[in-house]
Length: 180
Image 1 (spheres, rainbow, N blue to C red):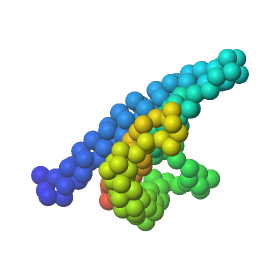
Image 2 (cartoon, helix red, strand yellow):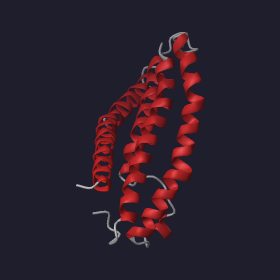
Image 3 (cartoon, helix red, strand yellow):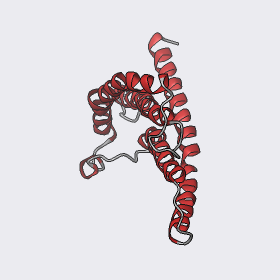
Image 4 (cartoon, rainbow, N blue to C red):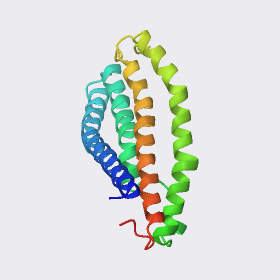
């Protein structure tokens, strides 16, 4: 086996592992959607039927939405669910799509995610250092966990961007343009 094929094989194993990780996380947090809907329903019933409010439950909805959106974003990218200019992309062949995917990953996604991570780490670290809590008296006591989702989002999206670049590069290196 040549060094090139070993490198290609190792990069594909790495890409597959990232895909599995993001798929596992995405499917797991997708169940939060049901929980968020049930809690929102309970909040509405409490407020309009019983005349009661709950800051704790309202903040739980925010935490649930944030967790879903931040942790499932990489899975959504993997599944092709992010917004693109599909009017052009849909008509492209595999090689042209690979050029768009590679350029998008290397020139847009990865630099932005690394910059986000660069600015997020001190922000999250400060929050953890004081174990930041809600400003509301009866709010949730773990704002630092909510802020940690920003860093987790950046890491998962960076990993998925690397996978996207690996797969696009493989298509471009294959003479048939299929990536196989």
